[in-house]
Image (cartoon, rainbow, N blue to C red; front, side):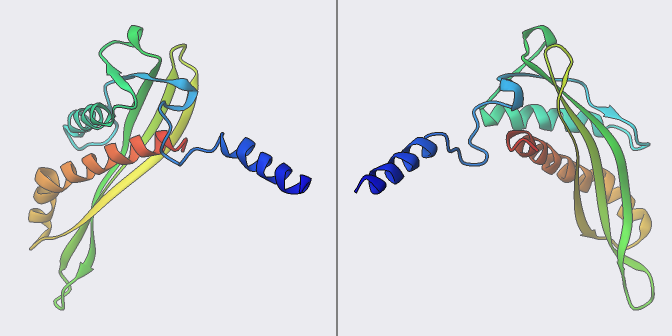
Length: 167
């Protein structure tokens, strides 16, 4: 009988500290107020940084586990993101040997810093979308006008999720 009570006691004791993945109410390091720095675009593709910064702000605003603040001074942590790679490449070809399906890939480097500038978390995150196109010119234009924006929205979600799961 004492064993059963002891086992139940252990379950209760260790069960109290259990959290579901993604259920954390703050970012690593206890960060609850987040400043999102301007995204750095290290690729030749223009304007990606503008869309990604907007998507990041929207994603974290909707999440409500942290508050996005407008200045570093008000923040517990700073999110820095660099777009390190952008590519649009053919992934399948038709019977004539012409590409008919393309993949747009965007890769970012993410750093979460505490208010003192110390790196709390660091990771590389990537997202992609596949799409059909008639020729290479239309594929590139479609990627610039539509697909890249979808990939960036997905990246914002992946960044948020990665931060709350502690990478």
